[in-house]
Length: 255
Image (cartoon, rainbow, N blue to C red; front, side):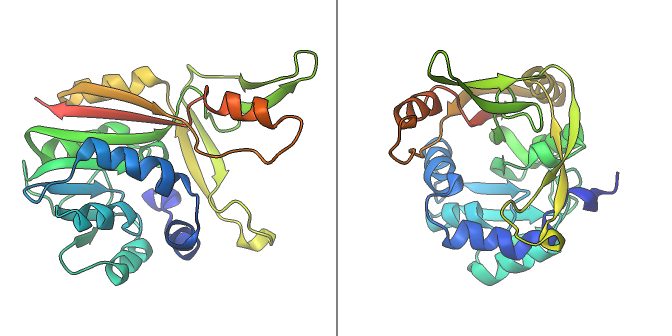
């Protein structure tokens, strides 16, 4: 597959508007606070933001004093990142599995947020992160939770008899690739853009990390912060929302 098939460059403007100007996003209210807690950026840290998009997380960590470099395959997103960001952040156009501008053992920490699930070359991407990190460095991966958010094979359902909401999972162990809409909410058919999402069970990620030489040091599961509007199902929806995590965090260390 051509790497461009999974680039988010053709929805760069929509994605930038979502992250920068919309309140209540998962990136802003769930992922960023948790990542900041774990990464704990310091002035002595050099951080590599892989598949950085328009630089949302790169800027957040640079504001805390870290030296940050971001890379993304989409030149459109890198262009926006450079406009938004201070010159202290370096941005490069490069695919996650071929960070040719990075020298070996350069960074203290690396991250890839909600992107690894859209990259076909999983092993190559993890191998590049390993190469870029110094010995003892940490790699932070944030995914749509592979056990509960499976494109076209998971959904919310309502049990009328039990008056309960539940998560239906129709497949999990099989590797899958699915065409998904990149900009949900587009009104006109011609405005809709699509990419490919790769579902992999948890063991695939763990095996790929250990094969590259990483030691998995931490796993966290993050739930949605959203609340339902008042209604007969609101209490149950809010309850189950806190029981089924949306995101998975894996921290792996280079040993």
